[in-house]
Figure 1: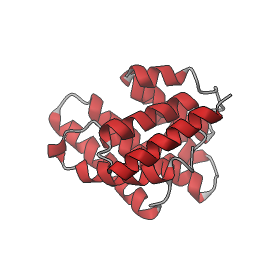
Figure 2 (figure 1 turned 120 degrees about the vertical axis):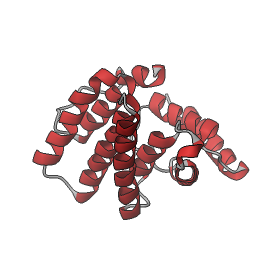
Figure 3 (figure 1 turned 90 degrees about the horizontal axis):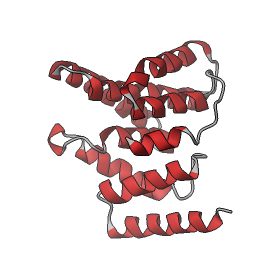
Length: 182
């Protein structure tokens, strides 16, 4: 939670109708359950009113699905948790199937399952997404703030079950990224 909270201060305060505002709303909800209703309003309002490209719309739909998974985290009753988890993960799975090479959609699905217990059955998705992200993130930074990118790299290395080669590639990319920073 501290990781997500620290990231919020790094993001600009964009217009509430931009994809950056959607990302910011998601990060706020990830850091604090009380921010979830406002994040949900931001995402659903954006989806209802903002004409954008299919790619941007797909990514905002992925944020909406990831917010459903966060709702599962915060629900009190087990059946509510399961309902929101299944709904959010089902949507993320469909979005990954539609755009398997979209790094941000993969990242959202990875972040949604990274801390879930193995017995829930999402371990294989986590491993597949981690492998794809390990290959794609060095080339596709997603314009993430450096601290967020560092957190993503750390999660991939700690929780991604990467092969030795994938770990080495990711470590090399992370090191190269640090050297390029002013």
